[in-house]
Amino acid sequence: MTKTDATDQCLIALLQTDGRMPHTDLARRLGIPEATVRRRMKRLVDERVFQIVAVPDPYKIGYDTHAIVGLRVQPGKIPDVIAVLDPMPEIRYIGVTAGTYDVVVEALFESNEDLRRFLTDTLGGIDGLRGTETSYVLEVAKRAYSVGVTGDREKRCYSAEDLAMLARCEAALAEMAAQTARNGATKPHRSRREGKA
Image 1 (cartoon, rainbow, N blue to C red):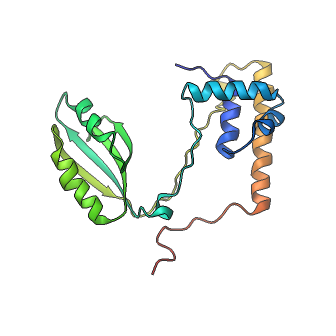
Image 2: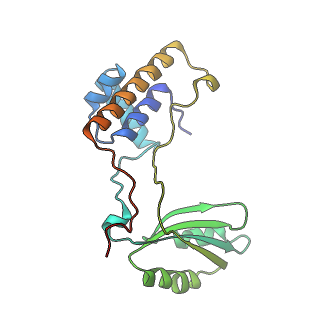
């Protein structure tokens, strides 16, 4: 398991705010050499601590049907069911859970007909699946991909150097938020259904 320090956490926090930020800007904002940023970024990506990817809004690229499906699976069959689900392009999340369902998936479709076929034909043909329950997502009220990485300072043992790094990071994040507000980049929440006839 990869252990991250305050510098790694600050790099991640800044990239969560602007994933296109150049290494030179990251280095300047955190007060560290660009070579350090480059080396750490390579390690964090290679060790799959994070990925740098484009994440489109599914509704804006034609996926108007969004469902969360709870699956009840026969005992001992969870790995087999996941192996079948994993390569399916319509599924964007698979979680093994405790409680009412053994597995929960989030899936996107271009139409209700595609969802119907997925539920009846695709899932209906999976060996070991005992039942499903589907929640149709009417509106996404929040979609966030950031994870609070700098944490609660009181609950961690940080060195004076780490605390200084976290302070620089927080100042950089505050500066970026103020710049975003000045540029008017924050837009009010809109329902995905707004503007449709």
